[in-house]
Amino acid sequence: MIRFCFDVSEVDFNALIDKFVPTLLENAAKSDDAKLRALAALPQGLAAGMLKSLSDDKKEELAVSLLSGYKDKIAAMLADEALRQGISVKIDDIRADRI
Image (tube, rainbow, N blue to C red; front, side, top):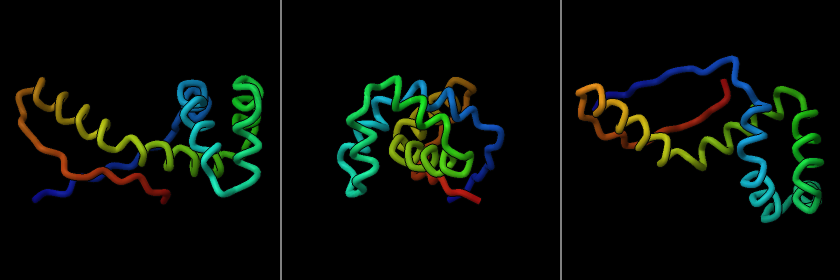
């Protein structure tokens, strides 16, 4: 097995918020954290604005959580692109961590 790792910097957190605010709010509604549940009850535009006002550290935490939830789709996308480039691979796992 080969481990392939890469670091990601300069993430456009606001674009992620715009794209995934419905998913973020859905997850927040299921949270044990009362503040997150309250956020989920807000109108989508207001919630997005509040998320965009968070510190970059908090945005990074949210991005890691979101990307971890999409790891299977990301793995499939990477494997599909590799195949388009003539390289057949099976990606067993993807992890998103803060460094």
